[in-house]
Image (cartoon, rainbow, N blue to C red; front, side):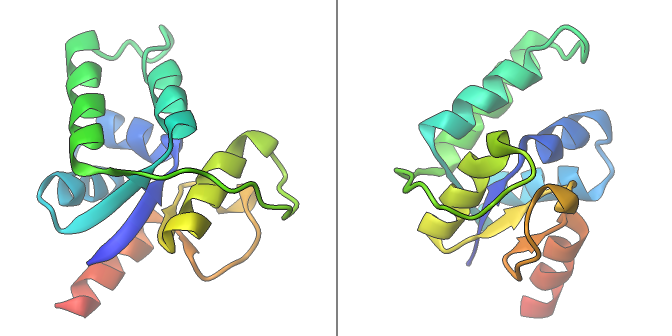
Length: 132
């Protein structure tokens, strides 16, 4: 089973566009087709971002998504890396993916170094199809 760490932008996109690849990533986690890994820091960011007023997401829906992610995911303890990142706030995702030996799924590739384990939601969907 493929393991993933998902960047917050993927969750936001999944809620905004229920028919897109980010929503398919989320559905694949909930269906048990891929394994989610997260850290306490990642869950805190998910919660902080998804409850922002600017998005206007329904609180009950966000709470259910976060609870389900915790249920289906596996908690990882981070080991801080020394890789240079354009945005240090993205380090938790990078480090979690490294610790879990998982794919980091993001809609913002430019926020990370060019590494094979850092992919877009579309690339993850393609990998899943190729594994069938």
